[in-house]
Picture (spheres, each protein chain N blue to C red):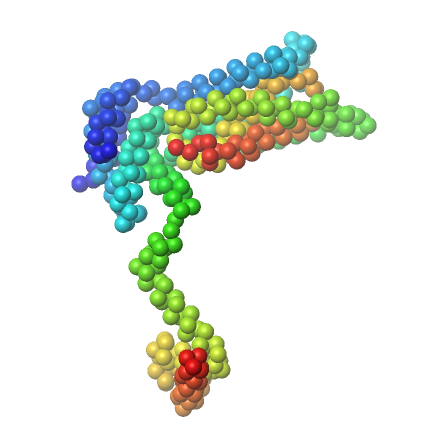
Length: 213
Length: 179
């Protein structure tokens, strides 16, 4: 095909593009995936029976604040990495803030409990499945983001994959809070973070293959 | 003449607002720009260049929502073009032929020079270091006997003798290797 003909063909299909089209598209993929993940939490795992009571305590909100703030940071990074000229990422150090805050709070929590209970707090009742569940629940969201990326133009595929993986993992963890009855912060700091990190790692591994265009 | 950033950005913005004519005009203006971009970086691969230009035009069209109107258009465009080129080399990478590599080395004159200097190094290592240094200074670097003598703090006759003996030794080694 001659390039001039190609241009003619392309120019036939020109719709208006909204200024926020890129964020909208990523949000749409995110929501589609999140609906599937929320359904999986509700139908397969089940919401925690004391959800309403838990939502009146502080621990639930600390958990949500932790996973939610990471989810927002990761989402913003994903939006940036979806552009070919993605710019600098100095501001991403902010994502360490929630981790440091939670680490501080967990230390305080541990300090105020007898050391005989530390192991029980750290392992909780679900340490064997927590990280795995977070990773599995991130799969639909990651899929939704992959759909978004079909019209986007990342040029650092590994980094973009990691950002998408972390976004999926952190939102999945946020939804997982609706099921997970664990109440110790050291548990969240260890097993939630591990789950989100594994999701990011998987994203980094898959990025170069799945995000190519 | 190369179209200006302002001109291209204006066309892109109009295209994003749904103006098909402006969009077509933009793509046409990008054609020579992209050809130039790839030609400068991939001389002698004309067939691939036209493919890449078309790939890039399609990407510019399909992925235009990733352009942020608050930022310069050309940096966005060349980021897309650069990505397409790297992706092209990456997919070709596995089947990159050795012949192409030879060609590159020949055009750069690299192979000849490195072969020759490797041979000289090998030969000079076979004779006493003092003789080798004298030969290097006078025959390769092109110093005069006086200059070489000054550098090594030796007498001129010493340098001359070293060069003479060294060359004789080299000649013998080469003769031996031809027997």
